[in-house]
Structures are given as C-alpha cells and as structure tokens.
Length: 175
Picture (tube, rainbow, N blue to C red):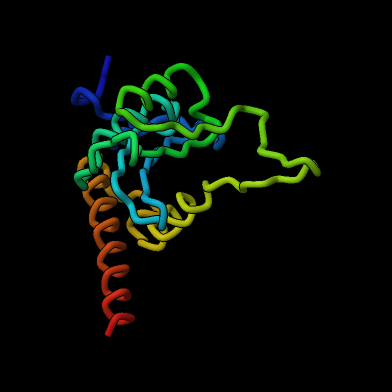
C-alpha cells in the first residue's frame, strides 16, 4: 500500500487552514474573520477553514486586535455590532467575556418603526466594504500561498496598506 506523508495540520492538497466550503460544492476554501472600526479600518484579521462557524472564530478575532483599546467604563462602553450568525449562546458569551456591549441582531428580526419600515439599516456594509478593499489585492482574491502563516501575513500586510492609504489621504486633505 502506497501513501503520501503529510505533516500534522496539512490539508490533503498541500495547503493548511482550509476546509470544505458548504456553499460551493465542498471545494476547499478559507474563511476570513475581520474586525473593523466604525469607518472600515481593519483592527484584526483571522483565518480558518471555510467550514468553520463564525462564532468559533469570534474569540480569536477579538484576541488578535493589534491596537490597544481603551478600557470600557460606564461613561464610555465598548460596543460591538455583529450579524445574525452570532445570535447564539456562544456568541453572546464571548461578547460578554471580552467586556463589550453586544449589538447582535436576532435571527428573523429587523428593526421597524410604527409605520413598519426599517429604522436603522444593518451596519454590515462597513465590513463588506473592507473585505472588498482587501480583495482588490490580487494575491488575496485567489489564495496562492499554501502555508496559512504566509496567507495571514499577506492579509495583515494588505490591512496595513489600507491604513497607510487612509492616513495618506487624510494628510493630503489637511494640507
């Protein structure tokens, strides 16, 4: 019987931190979990296999924040807006453990006013816009790196580039 040697943690086709994508006929894929500030600047990024549920990446994403956050107080609490995927006991527990005030939309619920119209639109577009900015980098749109550490380093470099561009534009405006 012939077999190929694989190192621990390696995927069958040579990359690591990949998993079957449940929405793409089981093809291998990567899930990027990203935390952004209110204007879309990336604060942390974590990767894992595409089959990993969002709530399992929440704690790792919150631990990977590269900027020192101010201590939450009663006057200035730290808010965290999450989508419906985090509306479960694990998501709520993780948000509380890290000391955030969680704003998690309940599954099947939309904020409506007296005329049954949406009052506050979802803030998910900020995260989606940042993911779109990251996808402009060709090396991130298609994952060429087989090693997860290299792919994560490319993502972090692209996040740093986004911050540099934002600060460069701000400097040009202030001149």
